[in-house]
Image (cartoon, rainbow, N blue to C red; front, side, top):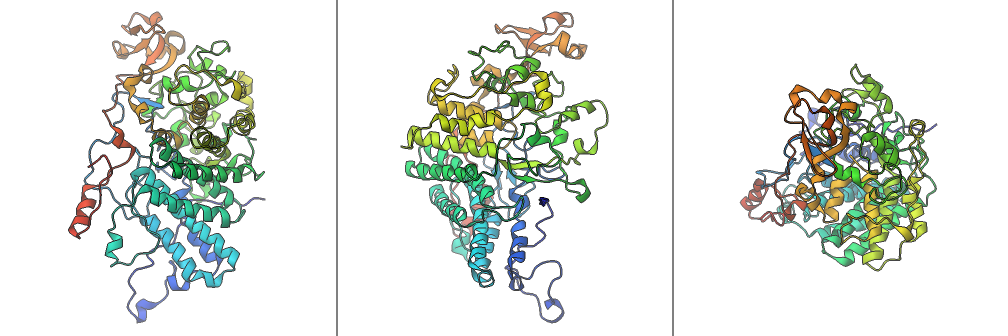
Length: 617
């Protein structure tokens, strides 16, 4: 029987105030009963494992807990070109904040939605460096060499993880690899290091991790496969960022090669497979035994470990933004071709019901197959809710699917991401950096393996079909492909978009590909449209007096029809999102976040310089 690891917000029960001032003698010098005493800790692997567990809820967030939204699908990652909301679209940051900093280890409220990462905060770097320091100075004497190297790999993994996120948000950041004293002013107030130098250090950490972390260390805990999966993510990000932003070709190459190597560790382990249907990955009460899930976060109401993500996909709860027509049109048809060229019957029909039957099965598993008034675009995302949750629309939901008492497990990282990371790294290396060419076998191990996932019974009963394999010799001829993107890489990007909708990836992908211009909705009128709706037949309740003069549809020929109270039969077309308009103008400076004015002033007051993020000066 497999053990379950409950990654909850309370697992990190230890304080990291390891450099706190000493207490007075006599009564106040008694050992603490609830927090560890630094010089009496680090005795064995049990002590060290408990300290390592304190990182889990911060890095392996899953669906967060209670009402937490940071780093969550659906509720956290909501800033991308996939979504359109009513009214003016959410703006980019357009001014330098007064302050942007934290020294807290709390995740809540410290992440930046529009950058998909942490604020200016080095508390977790410090915690990782304390971990490394105590392993070197204390624990090494208590452990055999194998155990010592394993736990050092764990500590260095977390340091690399944190720096990968900081660099993705701020670019250049100060790099620390030692524990600082309270009077180490020159280090405490050092200026930012070049992102290349920082990521070279991360690269070294990750090499050490892959070579020293245990292949297995229990069930659902950090081991070589979990670490390698995340390393493939971070190295793909930085490698492609370095390449597409024209920073350093040599670094791009070595990072992408490491992404490829890390992914291969997972792919060649024989431990994981595409044996699960897509819906089950996000709507199961227990992901233990799911062959595609490399790590998951388990929730259990009996232990008061719950979340609220399902409740925001249950059909009743509204979301600020939902899938727009640009995203919808990006889904491949089930014959493996783009809708413009597909031979599937009704491929050009964009009603929710027809899309479910003609597109890749991930569409049907992600979106409700009828127009839903609780969606800004009338296409409702229920990817992270069980199908049964829709049966409760209009009545009380059970705790598992309502409020913040949800108990579906969260896939923290899975095989689908790893194989796409691997394929993209290999394709970019081949196309631009002298790597070996991608083969049909590579496509079969990645994209086609994903497409061969089994269908669940309900999808099959509807007539949903698996998507035909991608054939390297006859890639789709997409008329909207960017001219600077080769056809194979375009199809890899499409696959990521279908696979990761409403998860972590889209904003990060736009940034690393240098495609943030997709967020300018003036470039395509489809950003302001939803699905095709026959209002008299599919949603007659929308034809009400309250929507006279505001409800609009756009015909296939571009004609716009406004509801006037008596033209019901004409209200058939693409739904025009109510009052939708473009977000604020932005420039390339939004790839990176500015730091706060007060942080720069604090440095100045102590006689030091902290540079502002490039473009925000």
